Length: 385
Ligand SMILES: *[C@@H]1O[C@H](CO)[C@@H](O)[C@H](O)[C@H]1NC(C)=O
Ligand SMILES: *[C@@H]1O[C@H](CO)[C@@H](O)[C@H](O)[C@H]1NC(C)=O
Ligand SMILES: *[C@@H]1O[C@H](CO)[C@@H](O)[C@H](O)[C@H]1NC(C)=O
Ligand SMILES: *[C@@H]1O[C@H](CO)[C@@H](O)[C@H](O)[C@H]1NC(C)=O
Ligand SMILES: *[C@@H]1O[C@H](CO)[C@@H](O)[C@H](O)[C@H]1NC(C)=O
Ligand SMILES: CC(=O)N[C@H]1CO[C@H](CO)[C@@H](O)[C@@H]1O
Image (cartoon, rainbow, N blue to C red; front, side, top):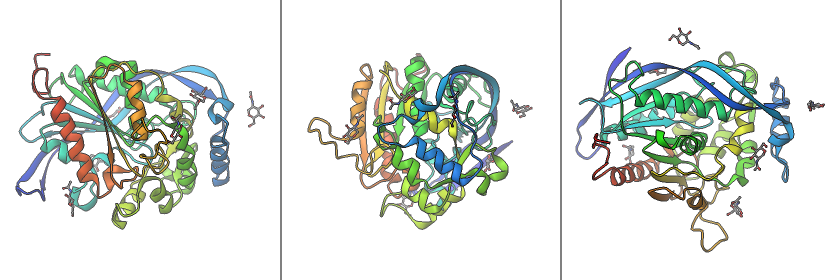
C-alpha cells in the first residue's frame, strides 16, 4: 500500500509539506539471551498490582529475585513499520525511531491536532527519511510469550536485525540502501537504542536518546504512578494475551507522561486512547538493559524533560552534586569515545516529550544537533563513506 499525504504546515513560509509514506512489514529472524523468570502471566488487576509491588520494594532487586537463569530465545517475527521520505525522494540520512512503553509507532507521527505534533513531519521537512516501527510484541507487530519472550534482549536483537536490513537495502519498499542511519529512541526505546550501539557500534551514525537517563532510582514512581491494570480489563483486551499491563486510567498516563502546564486535555485524551500496554517481561528487563560502558564513537544527544518522572524523579536539575549539572549528564562517563556528547533539558516538560507543548523546542534542538554533527565532510549527504 502506498499513499501520498499532503499536509498543510503552519510554518512561517506557509508551504505545503509533501511526504511519501508507506506501511511495510519487515520480517526478522533473531535470537536473544533472555531471562527465565519464575513469574506467571497476570490474570486480574489484583495480580497486576501484586506484580508491581514485588518489583518496587526499596533495597530489593525484584528482577533478580525471580530470575532463574538465562535461555536463548529465537524466532521469526514481523515488525509493522512505516517508512516516509520527502516527496522529492530519499532523504540525506535515515532516522530509525523506536517508541517507548505506553505507545506504538504512532508516537512519532501523532495525528493529534492535525499532525501538528508529528516529529516525522519535522524530520521530513529537514530533509531526512524516517522509519518507525511497532516494537516486538506491541501494536501490529508479532506477539510472543509476554514473560519469557517479549524482553529487552530479544527486542534489541530485532532493532539490530532491522537496521542491518535497512543498511543493506534489503527491506522491500525501501528504495535504496542507506549509508547513513541515525537512531532515535524515546524512553524504553532509548534504552534499546543505548544497548544497540553498545553491542553493535557500527550500526549507527548518530543517536538521540529522548526521555532518558541512566539513573534507575525512579522507575518505581513510574510503575506505581501508571495505575496499571490487566490488559484483559482494558479496551485492548482482544489484541493482547494475558501478561500485559495497561494504563488503568487517564490520570495514570498524566502522572507518567505529562508535566503541569505543558499539555492540552486533548493531548492527554490522545495518549490514553492510543495507548498500548507493556509486557511483564519488558518491566522485568528494562532496568538492566542500558548498563555498561558504551564504546559508540559517533555523536550522542540526550534530551529529557525537566520534570521527567521515570528517569529524573520529577526534577532533572536537582543532583546534589555541584559537578553534575543534571541527572542525564551522568551518562557522559558511559560514552568515553563519543565524538560529541550533548545533553538538553527541556524546560517544564514531562516524560512524553512529543505530546506536550514543548515539542516545538524539543524538535528544534534534536534537528539542530543532527544538522551540526552531519555537516562537513563525512556528513549526512556525503555518500562516499
Ligand atoms: C499505516 O498503518 C497505520 C496503522 O494501522 C494507519 O493508521 C495508517 O493510516 C497507515 N498508513 C498508510 C500510509 O497506509
Ligand atoms: C517460584 O515462585 C513461587 C512463589 O511465587 C515459589 O513458591 C516457588 O518455589 C518458586 N519456584 C522456584 C523454582 O524458585
Ligand atoms: C508475517 O507477515 C506475512 C504477511 O505480511 C505473513 O505471511 C507471515 O506469516 C507473517 N510471519 C509471522 C512470523 O508472523
Ligand atoms: C537487577 O538484577 C538483574 C538480574 O540479575 C540485573 O540485570 C540488573 O542489573 C539488576 N539491577 C540493578 C539495579 O542492580
Ligand atoms: C540518581 O539521582 C539522584 C538524585 O540526583 C542521586 O541522589 C542518586 O545518587 C542517583 N543515582 C545513581 C545510581 O546515579
Ligand atoms: C510542530 C508544530 O508545528 N507545532 C505547532 C503546533 O501548534 C502550536 C500552536 O497551536 C504551535 O505553537 C506549534 O509551533
